[in-house]
Amino acid sequence: MTAASALSFDLARARVAVGAVTDPEIPVLTLDDLGVIRDIRQDEAGRIEVTITPTYSGCPAMAAMALDLETALLTAGFKEARIRTTLSPAWTTDWMSENGREKLRAYGIAPPERATTRRALFGEETKPACPHCGSGKTAKVSEFGSTACKSLWRCEACLEPFDAFKCI
Amino acid sequence: MAADLVTYTLRLADTALVLGHRLSQWSSYGPTIEEDIAMSNLALDLIGQARLLYDYAGTVEGKGQDEDALAYLRDEHAYLNLLIAEQPNGDFAVTMVRQFLYAAFMQPYMEALMRSKDATLAAIAAKAEKELAYHVRHAGEWLVRLGDGTAESQARAQAGLDDLAIFVGEFFETDAVEKAMIAAGIAPDPTSIRPRFEALLDHVLGEATLRRPVFSTHHLGGKTGRHTEHLGPMLAEMQVLHRAHPGAVW
Ligand SMILES: [Zn+2]
Picture 1: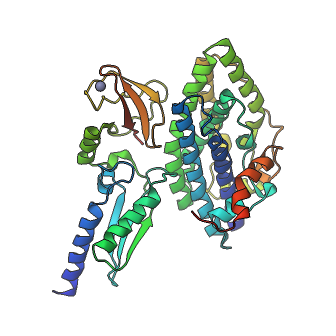
Picture 2: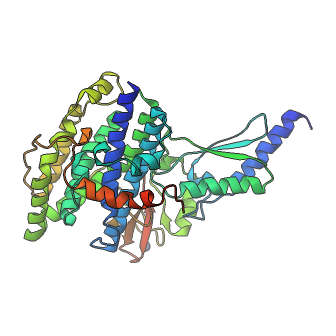
Picture 3: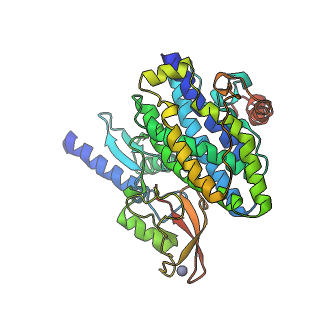
């Protein structure tokens, strides 16, 4: 194998390892689904560097994500892995994959709306459909749910409470 | 110039941290479980913003101070936060009024800071602005609910507003440090934010049937380390663990 193809082979293996890492708070989503993996590269020394971006400034899961990524790469046989954080461009829920949205819905969390509707300030926001029964008749219980990235809702058709991923 | 940038960044960081810590004091005391969680989430956003800003201030300063050194090892007079942030929580209405006044100013301010010539501040602002948009909506909805609620809730919201109004003037005051940052295209001019702040405030107060108080400029000094009597005790509680066990991790 030439040096160049060894490199691209390594990178492909790194992508597979990184692609399997899931969100520590929403285990049905991979970090790739979430859109926080911004770059995967390998330097001349063979080290893998993964660039991630935080969802929220104070997201307590970021440290766990970095550790999980490093562990996944070391387990896959890489001797050294670096996880770098970048702030810009700022993460947006528009980066969440279509596949990720479906997984969220199946898990019982209403996925974020496309193309940021959050500008609507008071009472004008789009209501998420109930992830359990699909009804559009839902009411917000709280702007902040179990984590900073989710709000808490109640379905007026099936009466079940649910989390909705906030559009940001 | 670098010294001014450190001071300016610390002012933003200290304000976010002090307000974040105040909100965290509500943890397990919220009026409902949902609001308890909401306030913890607001605190988390602000403390997260503060960490990014401290990290940057420490890097620019270049004296090896990390976020913990800046947050836990500076005394009251080295803190440069806006005075409104350190005011006691009072009752729930007071906390929501304080939160609304802060977020209604800081959200458009951060939006303006996104155009800063300083790339790091612009990137931090881009995250903070999105988060603060939710803070505005959350606190705004509460103001409407409290103001346009019972006689009791309205009286408490109005009292909070009248008490905290004396700290709003400070938002728009600038000294030599901030003027230098504005001239360099690093900081936005806070007076340019005022029309949006007032329009938002009037909209919400109108729906909340609350009276708009007079915003005086008698209470200044937070940005230069002259504080009200409330900051010292708050910092003592916040810093004691780190000072008793330097470098402890868990
Ligand atoms: Zn339903």
